[in-house]
Length: 144
Image (cartoon, rainbow, N blue to C red; front, side, top):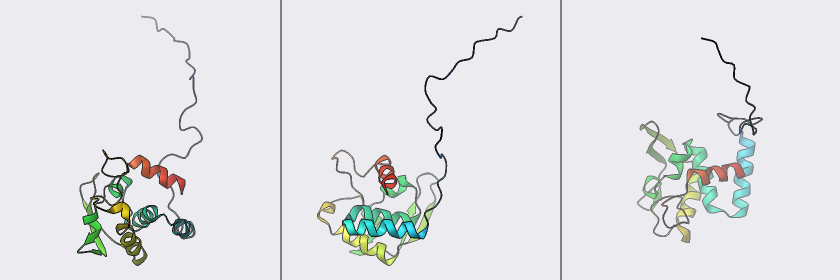
C-alpha cells in the first residue's frame, strides 16, 4: 500500500503563547510587595488591600482565596490570628497566620458599608454571584 504524503498546513494565526511566559510565575520580592501595599493604602481601596494582604500571608490559590468566608477569618467580632482552610484542589487543610497589618485591614474591610450582610470576604457586585470570580481576581493581580 503506497504512503500518501499530505501537503504541509500553515497556521492561519499566531499561537496564543508565542513570546509569553507561561507556567509558574516568579515570586514577588519584598520591595514590590511594599510598593503595591503603599499604593493601595494611599488609594483607600479597602477590598483590594485586604485581598492583597490575605493573599500574601496565606499563599492560597486564587480559587481558594476568593471563596473565603467571613466566618473563616472572623470569630466573635475579632480577626483570627491563625486560620485553617481546606484547599479545593487537594482537599487538605492548610493553616496560616495573619500578620498584624493584615488583621487591621481585614477589620477595616469588614466594618465598611459594602460588607453589611455578606457571607463571603470578597463579595461580588453582581446579585447572582456570591463572591468575585477567579477571573476577576486574576485581572486585579495583573493590574498590580
